[in-house]
Amino acid sequence: MSTLDVTIKFNYPGFDLDVCFPLPTRGISGLFGPSGSGKTTLIRCLAGLERPTHAHIRVGNSVWQSEEVFLPPHKRRLGMVFQDVRLFNHLNVEGNLLFGYKRTAPEDRKIKIDDVIAVLELKTLLNKRPEKLSGGEAQRVAIGRALLTSPSLLLMDEPLAALGEQHKKDILPYLKKLPQKFGIPVLYVSHDFEEMASLTQYMICMDQGKIRAKGNLLDVASELPHVMNRWAPDNYIDGEIISSDQFKLPDGQIIQIPPSSSPVRLVINARDISLLHSPPEHYAGDALLKGRITEIVKISDRKNIVSLSLAEQEIHAILGDRGGNEPWISPGNDVFMVVNRIKLETG
Image (cartoon, rainbow, N blue to C red; front, side):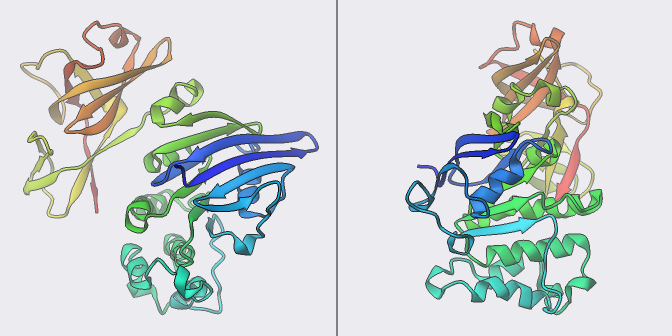
């Protein structure tokens, strides 16, 4: 059973919102769409800040809204993180974190303060005032404050939009840890498809008040060729360092990497993978790996996305029209992957 089931119909002058969807029990789900698509109206309805014409919103066993029920915002177990962090300037970081915690009934406190401080690496910031924080630090504090209300759902509305590119890269690893560590489903709102795809396991794409596509990356990609023609997903590969310059995948394959003493995972963009039917005698690239094709999705007449299993991890490669017509490129077939470029992500 899904944690969140939503049906909303809302009639504005010149704009109608009409959506119906479930969200997965765990992980980060994405709400994606251009400005004016209805994302903000939808999240205001979820938060109880708007009262739509017709709605049914259920989170777990709690009905937030139906024909007979309308819970006001303060009674909805919803944690919210905005683009504007909205920290309390008269409180230090510790005071901001405790604000939501103290206003949550003791029997409802599921998340521990020390766990939040550890996961978001806030220990050295506890005595600082908000004006002394960088943009990324302030956003981590805002996330921690929302978590400490022990919400049933964490709603993040464009939380990285005001940050520079480096601060975005710095905070993404923290966001990826949240569902697994705290067991709270996250609804992440953004108009940045690359940011969305790097975080989410399930996407809902909106346009003109309606859902245009929903599902995993391949489901959405097949419905949004105008997006996929400009963008290619990154693949994140887990394994272990077995020497200073060797990375071992769970299936035993070894990859040479630049010397590293910290835990890392590999990042490979889908455009940096070439597929071969048999291993080449020589290749120019960072690695040669073996995997199995699991699915092929046609994006356009000249572009296909191939889903592959690599050491029991799903990755994606992008092929042009010629590669998509090769008979050996078929689900269930083993293939060799020449990886032209590998990046390392620490943490």
